[in-house]
Figure 1 (cartoon, one colour):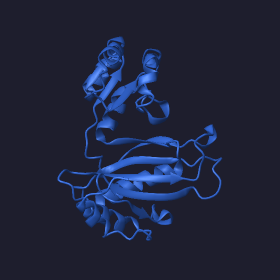
Figure 2 (cartoon, rainbow, N blue to C red):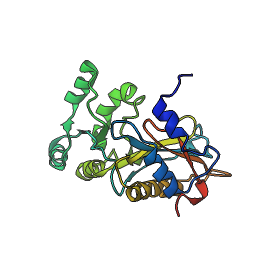
Figure 3 (spheres, helix red, strand yellow):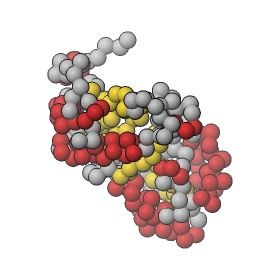
Figure 4 (cartoon, rainbow, N blue to C red):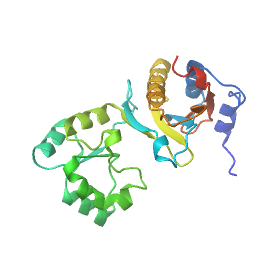
Length: 232
């Protein structure tokens, strides 16, 4: 295994690996251990007691964080006519249809973070399934990115809307802000995310739902959060 640098090792000494921290303490410690020269992203990693292999145990959705993520997402919208104009007025970075499919296919172009598409354009977007799917960029109704309300969707994404979904190991990975955010804003973003994840609990989920939660900055150590107190 690769060795961690001196800054990481020093930051790790501040963390009690055996302790489950309250939200406020975990947030404060995450900020304290973010010692990189750039403004690190603070991430939440949530392991759930579900099985992502079963369709009735999927956990997926989206939420507009109260204080945003600290990053303005680049939005590509697949729409035509009035809906294309609506997307442009809302501040979409790129708007198009078949021309955007060609650009992605021929130029391997991926200068965007989120795709929004009107339902009637999903046949066109579907041609990109093999390249968008593995990157997690395929629009989905559950995350609000397949909609005729493209203006609203663009505004929400620009305001700090994040998508959460299970990976193959039943873990959700979501950015909740930047290390430069004050503690109160990070804590509020985190609690808003956790409330959404708890509400999204599948009826088929049995036993303990929140298995483990870890907060970390981009270059910092993981800090375990007490799952029983995340929405307090």
